[in-house]
Image (tube, rainbow, N blue to C red; front, side):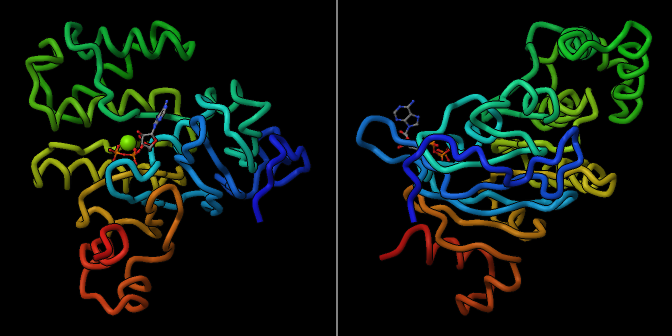
Length: 260
Ligand SMILES: Nc1ncnc2c1ncn2[C@@H]1O[C@H](COP(=O)(O)OP(=O)(O)OP(=O)(O)O)[C@@H](O)[C@H]1O
Ligand SMILES: [Mg+2]
């Protein structure tokens, strides 16, 4: 069932202002670049407070799907809503109400953490005193001490990513999209990053996260596995392991994403 109309503007999840039921709903969402279909009729929904892992091999279509859901890229067809807002017609409302760490996102390397907070917080309209409070909170939370005065480029990658996550949450969004936030980060720091994700989830925030690390897939409430633009499997990690007769998410992933 592939809807080729660009915007079926029926209410799928749109009892706003922010009185939405599901955090994210996608129905047959599709993106074509010319004749190439990068995202092919993907359908799923994500509950409020859920940690949803969006898995797939390189080029599977994860970033493209995420860019549509964050209001940055117009879909070709299908429909979707985020925080109850329509991805075709309400992209500005979506951007205001989500946090987004794009793939390879980093804070400004030649600014300090405080200066980055001033910049990003300023974009979201935070006032002077709020920005100051956020900066000291972050320096304390990450035990940065004097490192708080260092330029971002002088900090280890794992710290950069944790700070980038915190900055992506600076306006207290209820839904956050993280595109490979832990790529290249060491296992211990990745665990610390996931503590931040759990903390956000325990506050009721919804996390939509892509990763290539299968230990992280196990930390998600549910995952989907995308292959060549299609969602091939979706469910709780333990259920998927049972379904595919595998001991680990790594084996499930390999079975699906890289079939012989
Ligand atoms: N603007 C574009 N124009 C043409 N093709 C594109 C464009 N953006 C992405 N693609 C193609 O769409 C496919 C999906 O790319 P995408 O970046 O969404 O994959 P991904 O799952 O995020 O991969 P990775 O794990 O490497 O980040 C790829 O084949 C890519 O080359
Ligand atoms: Mg990507």
